[in-house]
Amino acid sequence: MFILYDILKVAWHLYLDVAVYMLFGFFIAGLLHVFFKAEKIKAYLGNGRIKPVFLAALFGIPLPLCSCGVVPVATGLKKQGANSGAALSFMISTPETGVDSVAVSWAMLDPVMTVIRPVAAFITAVSTGIVQNFFGKDSPQADRIEPKPAGG
Image (cartoon, rainbow, N blue to C red; front, side, top):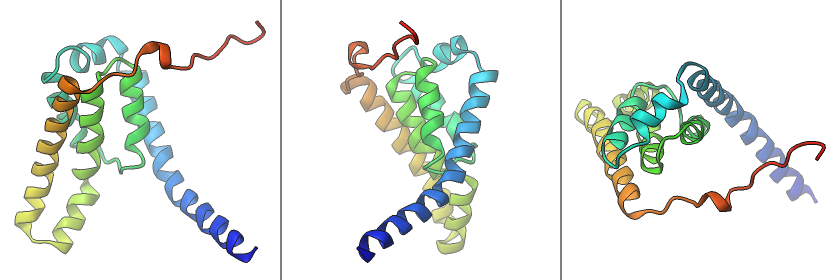
């Protein structure tokens, strides 16, 4: 009984630690939804197989999002028309190139690795997104659960 309590207590503290970053991610996703129209996102990140992936990785580099906060933003981009490869590229490049990640690399590694790490993250993000666009499957629209209208 005490073990279950300890597990729930640790899970709750983990949830509290992650909640701040998730809220920040939702905030950024809300800003993207308000200030960037879906047509613009579709035009830049929705059409094509290589260019949207490259642009999504570039767009994700300066954003200060961690791996928890990037999920809602990538979901928002996907809902606004970004293709799967672009969303995946954004999800990989953003947490790896954040200011906090670079600062930790500088403190724990040397300056050469501090430069190599974001470059490697960018290359990994672009290559993964391109592979997704060429060989991956998008989930079919029929498999998505649509909310039913209220009262009907």
